[in-house]
Length: 375
Ligand SMILES: [Zn+2]
Image (cartoon, rainbow, N blue to C red; front, side, top):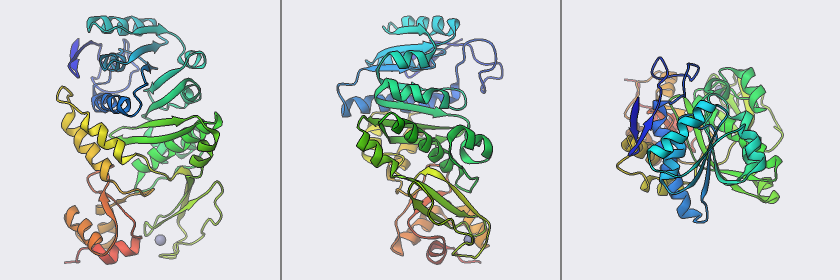
């Protein structure tokens, strides 16, 4: 079937059930990733404003070639790589069909990345990106874009798998989408550091079934050292939902009891990424680069607008979960956040869900400042 995305026309075979995994026959195309790809195009535009020299782009798992087609349409010098002959043919046909010049190669992308350099490397695999990240950091100059769809290992719901894949301990908490993103970022930052590269996230989002992040590279060992300083630990109380953040390579003082409620049901996650997941100024440029031909322009704009104004804390709270915990009915989010701000705290919505918010207040400060009345 032929479909249109971002004003371009793409020939694809949809998977048998219409939406999910690419285990079926044929070259895979995932229509639910349109938001991801629209934001990618806006990031590619914004990044060229930031680094006008940037021109080469690798679509590392090309499949239908949709990402490569869209990047080529933005003027990038594109290479579409796939290990599957049929996918390379489809990607090539889709490029030609849109009168775009780009290279489609049948290669093991890890081999390609160890032999060639690209300004931008885009990893969009099924499941974990881990098998490709070493090669990506060795073969990318400026920007590495990463999708991960294995949200259960990342957020600690499949903890052992998360520990194996990401060499860190994720924990299953009420802020699981953010835990997942920070687990991914921890592994990416540590992997890049092995090559003396600092990989700083400049835009990230967690949407329904995946995390997506854009990392700007700085090829100086000292920059990599500084970035590693932003790793650390989250100590989380399963009873009152208090959390304590501890920076550094080693946890100095794993608490045995919760300092707020005295519970011994404490979880420690880490080493996790505690730094910013986005650069607000860059996100604002990305937002400006969204355009009308994008199918998800309104959703993307809402999402980026929330990310742009998210305050920078390593975890978020869920307002409904807290109100349930306190035995009070939830009030309107804006009212709740205003109460926090009026009490002198920073507070913002968070893009992870409609009831997610961030604040610099502690759990008991949140309750004192913003818990709605019981009746
Ligand atoms: Zn507690």
